[in-house]
Every structure is written in C-alpha cells, then in structure tokens.
Image (tube, rainbow over all chains, first blue to last red; front, side, top):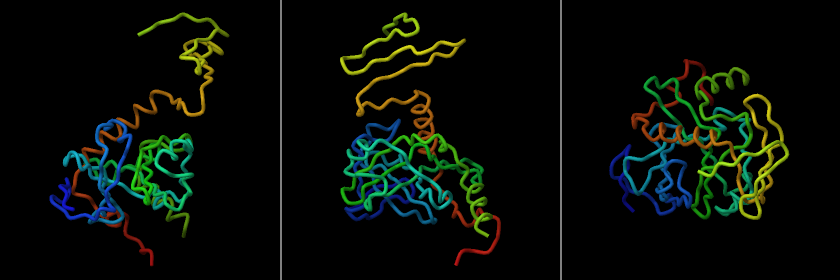
Length: 151
Length: 79
C-alpha cells in the first residue's frame, strides 16, 4: 500500500508495517493508525501517522545506548495489545526521540516507551514505573558512557 | 470541580471500588493512600503531563535526521 510520510513523501509499505494504536499516543489520542518505517539513517525508525501526514515520531531501540534499560509496566496494559510480558518474543520496545536544533543534544524518552506486538500489529505507549527512566535521556552522552565502559 | 475538606485519617470514596485516604499532612505536603482495583492505573499527574509534552516536542522533530555514528566523536567502529 502507498502512504504519505512526513520524511519521505509518498512511500510504499507492506501491510505488516501498519500498526494499530488502540489508545493512541499520549497527547495524540485521536490518531490510532501508524506505519513503522526504517529511517534512511540508522539506527532510527519513523512511526508515521497514517491519519495525519505531518505527525511522525522518530524511534530508537533503547538498548542501543542503554543496554541496562528495563520496562516496568502493568501486565494488564500489555494484555490489551496481546502481550504477556515485555520479554514476550513478539514485543518490540522503542523510545521516542526528540531532536533539537543542536542535534548532538538529541534525547530519548525512556519513561514513556512505545511497545509493539509484532504479531498482532498493535502498539501503545506505556508509562514506565521505574523511576530511573526519564523523558529526556541524552542519547550521545549515554552512548559514549556505554562505549567507554565496554572498552 | 468538587471540593471536599478532609482531615488526617479521613477518606473519600470514588465509586464503590476506589478509596482515597489522607495519611499525613506535613507543611505543604499531603500523603495520600489509594485503594483501587488492579486495573485502575494511578499515576502522578506530572508524569502524564511530562510524557505528553515530550511527545508534542518529538512530533515537531526535523525530518533531516543525522546518522548516529556521524555525531559520535571519531573512534574505532564496532565490527
């Protein structure tokens, strides 16, 4: 199917990339259908609204810069998108990225992760109840710290 | 908005399944106890507000994404 995207204009996607967010995303509750696209720039993804072309979120896998990332959420909230736990093999976990003018200060929201059930193609934004995780984690700084540790 | 006055150890019921008690009051801080069914999510309001605000900012992000590697200080790359 062909969709209109904010980043790439008209693009062809597979039906499997279409994700339903039954509860929307906080602040965007009315928008319930998105497409998950690989961004041209690794390791980012786009979560593109299929209702409003101008609404799209940049996503990243949190473990890329925080291998210690953990999601603590209510099980019944996961059940609502058909998952038993965040360790479920069908669970994909992303963080929404905010990119300010100075791109090196880009941040990821680890307090409100996006969880997608890749089998049922449903997703939702959950609130991580673990107080270690905030709405603004400096990706490059934490990635740098992680690499230093790894050396 | 309904406004009720309560003292320490008093409580209010919301419907027949949710009870909010005043546990302690110290200075400008009130400690609340909440009894609610497991499927009722209770969050501090500012957590919701912070995530909403962050989503709003994220939605305005440029479409001109950098490659993450290009922003990192030059060093040996992962093999």
